[in-house]
Amino acid sequence: MTDWLKEAEQLGGQLSELRRDIHMHPEPGNREFRTSALLRKKLEEAGIEVQPVYGTALRAVLRGNGSGKTAALRADMDALPVSENTGLPFSSVNEGVMHACGHDFHMASLIGAARLLSEHRDTLNGNVVFLLQPDEEQDGGAEEMIRHGVLDGVGAVFGAHVNPDLPAGTVGIRYGQFYACAAKYDVTVHGKSCHGAEPEKGNDALYAACLMCSLLHGLTGNYDGGKAVVTTGTLHGGTVRNVVCETAHFSGIIRAESAELLQNIRRRFLLIVRQISAETGVTCDVSLVKGYPGVKNHDRETALVQKTAEKLLGTENIFVLNEGTLATEDFGCFLLERPGCYYHIGVNSSAPLHSPQFNPDERALACAAAVHAAVISEYLNAEKEK
Image 1 (cartoon, rainbow, N blue to C red):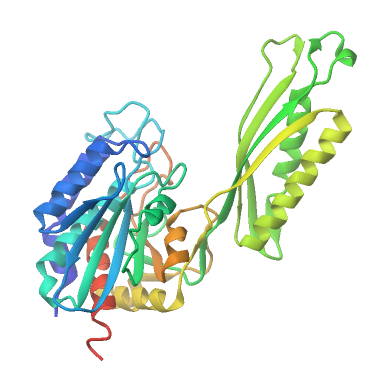
Image 2 (image 1 turned 90 degrees about the vertical axis):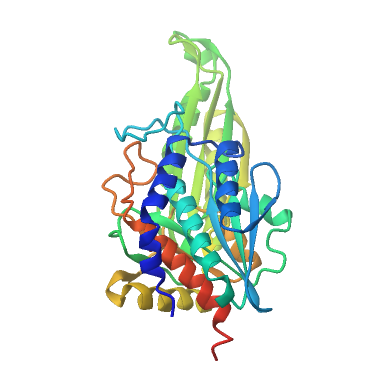
């Protein structure tokens, strides 16, 4: 029986070196050129066939020793528009760009799993597809990859995200709805400009926008369908202090724990905008578009991950999470197409995700690589062992 954890730990130094290289050279969505080239090189060195998909996206295939199923393992490649403030010797050299969400960790652990599985390809009853996805943080690269056929022939898809709140060397499992459904919004408010000393001659767009933002914030809370959060991330209006603002714009995102609740909040959102528009006399252009569909894990594959991780790390290091998260993640697009599971890797960081100080514990790299490899192997060989 393969000791995935022991073998992964022997790769620990190399995985750390790779993670630091990627971390030092972060690239934004759909511009992960250096990152993609580096990952392609690492996969090819492991004897894995790499197939460019579009832009920076990669699909790599490891052919096992049998005609069984095909499992996919995904990692995201893009970094965030964040200025790093960790003080690390391998801090980002790209101004205003940082791997503040752990995607560098995701990629390094996928390469670790690829190397482990490649070394044991003769034991795999089936094939493994490795998906290196661009642009998770902005417009979402998962849907585009699916349109390019990366899931053709795939029976199940797996992936993971770092979790700074869990200890390094642990895994978090969530059955059912895990990540929130989302919708992005942009609202442009049109009023009438005038001298600030004579507000009765104008119609203040900025005032109306502020009223809307305040009431929309009140939609955050608990509902029968779960939790919802409405975030206004930007608000812009006006040109000078003594002129009533003619045009204002605000934008943000709605997150909800179910698709039904998301639709409920969308209706309330539009009602508030119409109400304030009528009360203040402004007009509005509203764009309210679908965001990520949420991550909803499949029970069978989630149970497989839990069982495999418990066998590998011990039951005391596996956490079954009682609550989902209101964060969004486009891995859910893959789960709408194929059964699978998205799980958490504990990295014990004092700073949260998306923070300029975020720094995951690299000791968890070997754990992540081992879990990925063990899950894929277990999925491919489950029927063979019956």
